[in-house]
Image 1 (cartoon, chains in turn yellow, green):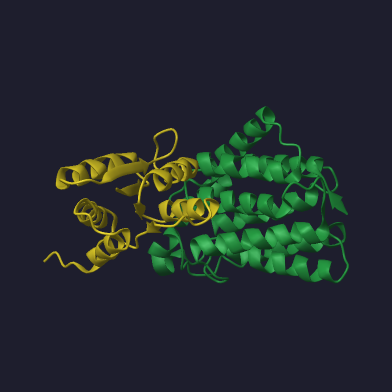
Image 2 (spheres, rainbow over the protein chains, first blue to last red):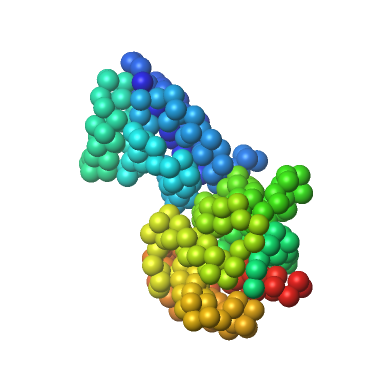
Length: 129
Length: 211
């Protein structure tokens, strides 16, 4: 089973987006979300990102990380480096909300982790109007 | 000169003291071009680091750096968390479990830290980030120490270069981080990450004298 890890500066966005993704999926995919600081303020707990990513990379067949602005991506990159760049774990260069929803659906359809990353990244170019 | 666990503890304490004393200043700098939390975040991170050092048994330079790195990762919150977290973790990895570090090993650790910062943020010199202080200072240290000088001998120059490089971020337009969203409006402000980096190198130097 694949895992999607949502990272946001905002705990509310992380929680809300996880809910949105769960509503969209029918098949097998694990959705996880980390947002905000230890105190629940805006920010990111990079140590928690590290431990969560460690756990997911151990338990899943592949992990796709999607983050919002700046430091969430840095926290993810830092975690990957510290874990020795585990196989099958990718950071998608994708918009958070659209990317996560697309990734969750794609992963639940049984696609490969590489295919999920590709689909999430394509969400950048989807026109809304 | 050899740098032992005592030296690195002094360094962390001095760095924490600068971050506490300049909490408001760093926050003001960040409020001008970022999200206004750099001072608060760094002070909280440094305090968490000191607390962890007080409860764990970190007895080597590498173990001390690792403890600080993990504390910063968990408590800083903003981009400075992963960035400074990487600085300390990379130094820890470079120092391994050696009891004492010499000048060359110290600089090698700082070089690894710089590579870590650049790898995370993809920033280059001139982007108005902490790299604007880190790169010239680490290069200067490396060059001098390769030529047989020691950190105590070049300390005054290191502090002066760090300060000059920090001030040189004022006229730059930010190309990385949240300040880059401001475009030209980021010109005329000193970069907060470059400023905390100046305190980092200043602390590294001042820890030598045991001050």
